[in-house]
Image (cartoon, rainbow, N blue to C red; front, side, top):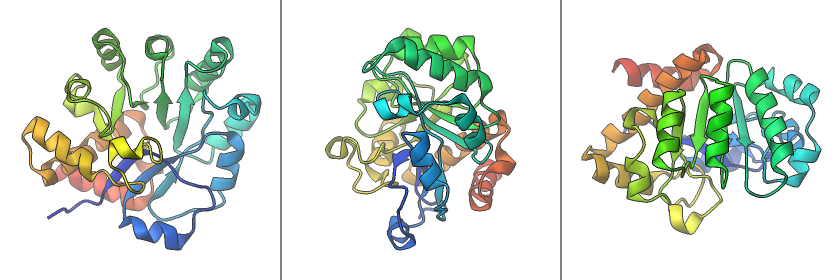
Length: 251
């Protein structure tokens, strides 16, 4: 029924996850975000099939802000194609978060960037407009309609999960949307039992768009292909994921 495996463009997985544990995820392709530079350092020594580790500096995590170093970040992103989770959060010092996030946007190489914006959606959009990057994915974005329009005009994509309302989902451009679980956050609301479990989300999107479930999943990969092309990271992705987005684009 499904020619493509499950796709999760924003989840959190312990950096010491084992191959046996990953094997229970049914071949899902997962963008595994880290929260601190130390966490990424641990994760990058643990490559696992199907997991793409992100370089994270979570704005709502004090340890992430205290560990921040432009030099360390620059060295880390040389070994990664994904940056995340980064951005702004209503918790913590706004000025410190803005300095770090702007530094990341200005100096990020060709990469995909998963951006957090809880409580500071408009400020995130303003910084992306000021420091455009073709790989930005706004994670669980709940900004106002004007914020969405501005973000889309700036080239942003949006990762959505089943905890979002129908209204929030349908406000986003369909060809810019990617799936996420944000596992383990809000499991009771997203319905995600494990990372990569986007079944509830797919059913919701199928209902809203009147597409079949396989069509919804193919669109996820097609949208990812478009984003990867814009961000110029196609050849930096794992070979298996490269093949999947190529098939989705041409099949």
